[in-house]
Length: 359
Image 1 (cartoon, rainbow, N blue to C red):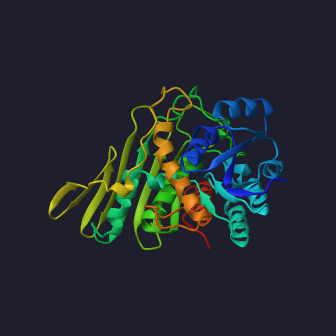
Image 2: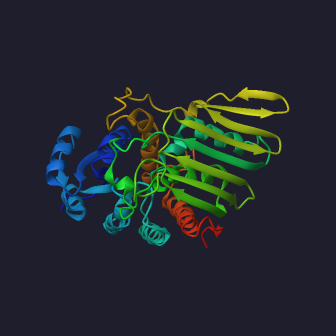
Image 3: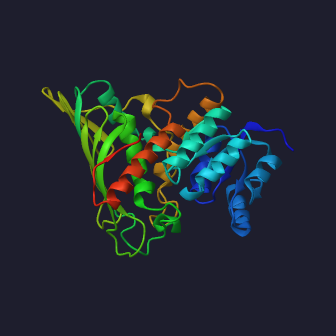
């Protein structure tokens, strides 16, 4: 058995794991010592392409052989709980992809295990570090709009409008935890919580807009009330043809803040102004944009914020928290998002019935 080191990382999952986890971990100073998956042929190919020295089909064996003290999980949502608990049982720090768990009940078990073991536990809500999102939240926190009262997040996205688009199978597999609510909506749910706090109640529906049948949702519609009294709505379709169209706006007692094309604006009695981006919210230089039809087509957007997440993980492992420009998302944030997702699913199953969140 090799002595465990928190500087040594195992990445479980060869899709997003190889494309984003591996380079972001390296950029943050970790040594990626192995990949873990289920298909030896694919693992061997991906390990060679990624420059990872070893691969395994069993997580426990991988930890024993490599001495890894950190496990990052980039597999289908239905597998997150089992893998996270196995890693925690070996004393490993864990970074888990979203959506966090199969449901909130499993999420609670993951939180309890991680906190009892005293290991660093982060959830992959890396988009908290996206500059426009972070600046939007900072404007609210610094009182530029007064007391926030009303929030709207609406998006039309062509991501899966074409049924022939190359996408991971699990995205449309209900049993695997698929659906756009978990894949994309979980990020926005977390973003709302990071900006404004916890959800109190909601009414929602799930739907399929693209030309597919008997699959998990590619769209959702949600109206909510937060614990602090803010009212809001959020609608997203990843199955809408045409250019991506976004409306993100929060109105308060003294002003309004919104994001547009990566820039953030505030309007109040004095007029409208663009907010300058502070240096602490800037990301590392992105890699070149890839072919829009390739699996790497979003890497130039994803790698920067994920690198910041991995840097925050390293700080957390080494006992430093002060360098992160945003609140670092932990398993508790993952659980809170799962409670919202559970409530959305329950509401949709009852035709949009009003649901309380959590508790």
